[in-house]
Amino acid sequence: MAKKPRATEADPEVAGNGGGKAKEKPRSLKVAQRGIKTASDFANLMSGLMSDLIEGRVTPQIGNATCNAGGKLLKVVEMSYKYGVQEPGKNPRRNLTLVFEEQKQLAEKGV
Image (cartoon, one colour):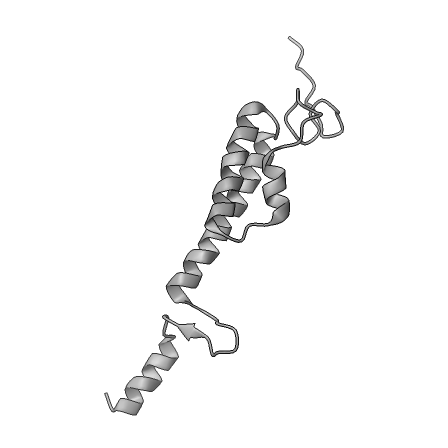
């Protein structure tokens, strides 16, 4: 039994979208091009991406890469809230105390 040749990105039937819908652009592309700045933008991107995957507008590899990048973006936001953020024109506010700073503060207090 001969193996079916693997489709490549150069193949117009599958170029960037999983085949079959080569003329239709992914819906999530417009959201991604505007940029992800809010939770609503992120939700719209993921919703569009799910639709694009189901309809075959993007390859599973592109969907996987987008989801991985989205997870890292959420992690950055989480860490900003958890450990502090820098406000324009102000010193950074930190919720995290570094070990050597904590020891210095304890030494100053005489503990």
